[in-house]
Image 1 (cartoon, rainbow, N blue to C red):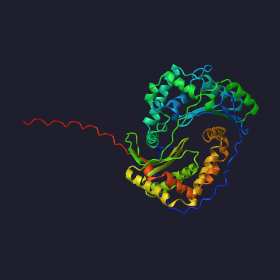
Image 2 (image 1 turned 90 degrees about the vertical axis):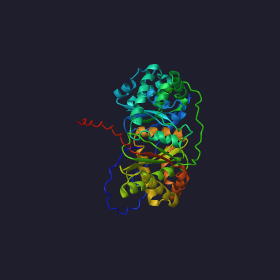
Image 3 (image 1 turned 90 degrees about the horizontal axis):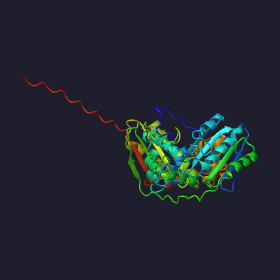
Image 4 (image 1 turned 180 degrees about the vertical axis):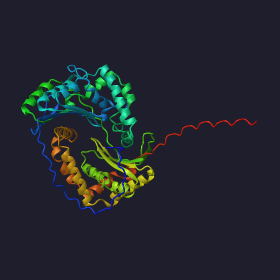
Length: 461
């Protein structure tokens, strides 16, 4: 979500009655064929063969994220997102990036509450390089003093730039501590700098040996390759890696929130007044998860959404509206972020948000509104399968989070099944007055400079 991004308010044009939204016909969902199997050491493998271009993508998902951390050692999963690029027994420090770029490829990695992932995009004749690097990092990645100390500084600087000193940068961290209080979702993947500083080398090594093992990993290869040849390479590179210990999974359940919370975040980096209203939401695999996502879209996605129409176009109270449904493995959050105009009181934004949410709880939505956001979702899903990398990522995601790789081909059906009645039911269940968590971001005026001392008057003669 692009928090803090603003759109200049303009004089709204005269409204025309919009044509009723019709089901999207132009976009076709591709069927993603795949084969999956498991090595004796527990590594789950998914192969998606597609020879439309001479490129290949690999995607390795470790089922470990910030929720697997101790409350006094947050940031470990994100730390390993960086540390796994330090090298291995057979790859010198700093060489992974160079090996991939010199082969005409690129790479990246990311961390969330539930998973950490690593991906390569390469010409198809360089697939072996990606498989070798990933097997090296899994078998004997470098977790040693020099790399740990280097990455401590990298991670702390990333936090300073992206969280501590960025406009609204602490938003998700503050919100998570409210919405998910008392659960491992209470802290965010970036973690706390003091815990990264306090952690010992052995603690990092233990975390690596616990979670970066084949039985906690899903490997996807997508693109132009020969399936039988790749199976032999995977067996050669990953087969000798020993299975790890049983993976501990945090056990918790989000309880219904019984009272609203409110917090003011007064920071000098806040450029415009802003408010956030957020509620606990279901996990992404819940039956009503699609209804919650579409409900959020109706409220705040795009310039024809209810909140944008009212707050930006009609009343000129805000410069932007952003909705963020963040549905996770064991729960979720549905949030609305509104960037106000300079003179807008935060209480006015709160009142408008409350009123628009109440309208849906009390009166529901129209079939036309629902069809419009379904069309948006169709285009979003179709574009998410446009590259080999995105297909690989989705295949791993559905296998790990849904327990069903084939769910990749049935997501549109989940959204198409949502009715106006289901939207209203989701609003009544989740978007309750007692379940709201509010953040206020006022603009902090700089302190006035101390007045210079007045000149002394000359003594009377």
